[in-house]
Amino acid sequence: MSDITELSLAQIAEGVRAGNFSAVEVLQAFLKKISEKEAGLNAFITVNSEGALAQAKEIKKGQEGRLLGVPIALKDNISTRGLRTTAGSKIIEDYIPPYNATVVSKLLAAGAVILGKTNMDEFAMGSSTENSAYGVTHNPHDLTRVPGGSSGGSAAAVAAGMAPAALGTDTGGSIKQPAAFCGVVGLRPTYGAVSRYGVIALTSSLDQVGSLAKTVADARTVFEVIAGRDPYDATSVEALNKEPKELKSLRIGIPKEYFGEGLSPAVAARVKKVGEFLEKQGATVQEVSLPHTAYGLAVYYIITPSEVSSNLARFDGIRYGVRVENSSIEELVSRSRGKGFGSEPKRRVILGTFALSSGYADQYYLRAAKVRTLIAEDFARAFEKVDLLLTPTAPTTAFKIGEKKDPLSMYLSDIFTIPANLAGLPGLSVPAGTIDNLPVGVQLLGPKFSENMLFEVGEAIEKEKWS
Amino acid sequence: MDIDYIARLARLTLTPQEKKSFSQQLSDVLGQIEELKKVDLTGVEPTFQTTGAADVLRSDEVQKERILDSREALANTKETARGHFRVPKML
Image (cartoon, rainbow over all chains, first blue to last red; front, side, top):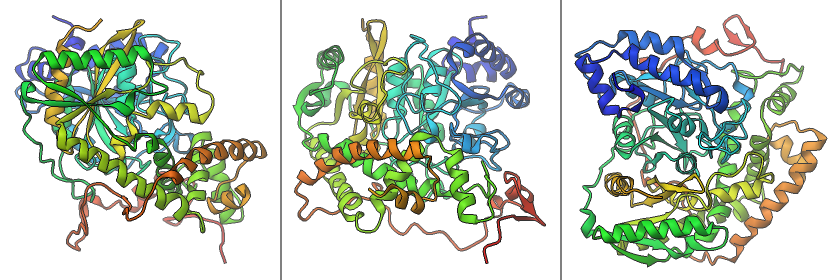
């Protein structure tokens, strides 16, 4: 039999349905990969060996389901009933959710098997998976380097062949950037396209669940399974996916502001090369301007901590998680949080509390929210001229573990993913070969609900051989 | 920034070391954020969300499938008393 771990999701589902192999055999093939590779990578916080086996045993040939017998890894901020969910934090290290996130229910309904929970920066705050309370995840292409983050465990698991696909979450670039660093495809859908019910919240106005996979087709399959309006998430909407245009009639924009200081020249050259390739396919490529790009990071680092300071208020030591006893309830709560949270959540809670505090909210939060409008208008104007945008996903390839010590330099690795996220737009990171043996990704951005167009163009890019 | 005051508002106990390093790091971050003051925001409305949805309502009915029973609700707490969450005396 050919190696099951090399198959596409559709091939696995069809093989299980036809009885060529069983869901248990599929699961065992991936668990074997995990047993070979996980020790060097630390991509998982929890491998769901027993639970997955019980699920796989229930799946019989002849059943329907787009993901029949397909094992899927989930970022550990996605609630799974009865299966520990830590969000990468010590503060809920023994938390067992009493219910499934809607995306989990949808995966199960499509016949998927929950393979395990992947490592992540604590509460998805980070760009390298170094901020996890469960140790650093290593990049499968070079173990001395980071996998990106915060969905670094999901990206590494897919890149190493330990999972055929994974879910991640993306607030400032947490799917797209690790996908680029690990050489896999990463989709951040349009804000609202996928339910966030049961996903541990970071920044509610930005958080979105998406897929990571080896190919565009696989990332698309998972997206189609999890997308759609959910009555349990009032921000979710029915995705009205636009029909894609043909590549030869497509107008592609390259934003000039993305090619400034901080971008590696080799990455810049690769993006240009991808643009030339798309031109050869018949698309027209032109320079466009997104004049407020430079403010994206500053806006993000006001809006995110502000929402974080509110969302993380629920971790009080009383209903779940670390509890430090004290005769005063205020001290019990403060000390439990002080003991349970790591550095980055504390830093952001403090910054966000300050930004929202009396006398400062207008100066910081309201101002950031207004600049956010200008950033969104930049994109709207660009999409009057072009159908989609081509940019680098990240300014560099994967950096060394421990290389970025101060928070500001770490924040800079998301400069190309943040602006479109602030505008609620979908983005797809597609591998475009390697530079010095490290994967490089390009980012395709489109108007809301243009996922189908991103997939079409992404497939053209992945078919081409890049050096 | 008065870090003790902000930590109190956030109900977050910080070590002396954390107070020192956060004060420095946060003033660096706030320095970057000063950039936003350069932007002319006359007549610009704020963006708090991007779906454009407003007043998303549902019928006011109990959703039985979403109700946790008391055992499930208390399953993750360290301290319970007679089927309730136990907290220190507040009055």
